Image (cartoon, rainbow, N blue to C red; front, side, top):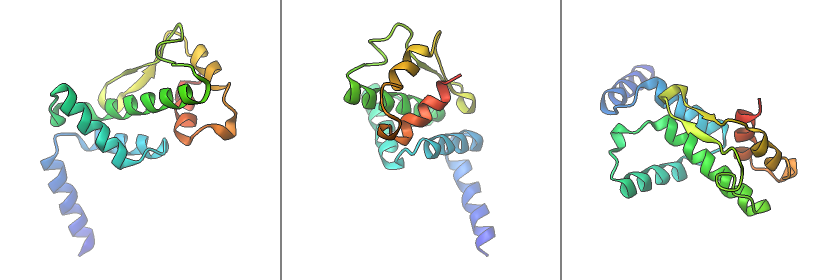
Amino acid sequence: MYDTLDKEVQSFLSNLLPFGSLDLYTCVKTLKEADVDFGEFSEYVEEFCKDTGSDLFKLDICAMAFDYILQEARREIEEKIGVDILNDLKNEVYVIGNYCCTQFNSEDYNPTIKTIELIANDERSPLLDWFMSQIDE
């Protein structure tokens, strides 16, 4: 009975939400791997929609996840060593949104990697470790 109900719930959600199931899967997988609190991410998306007048159902939810992670990594680095990786470094990292193929990009990741390496491994959050794993070539 519950297997059928789970399938029906999934079918209902896929019809209700405009995001493709692969996009949702990729978003949730990304957030989980980076140890992001789903409630905090939801608040971030809601604030983004409110501040920009964006329609939630027209957002690239995967790009939103990557942008959230980038902003949180930026905040953590600035708090720990006083460097703003999006303003103080020569080649900043940015998000290329393409739904389930979203990724970070930069002309040169080395300044960001070297900046993160100034923070001891045991002082980095799982989110910062995940971010670094995505940009460390």
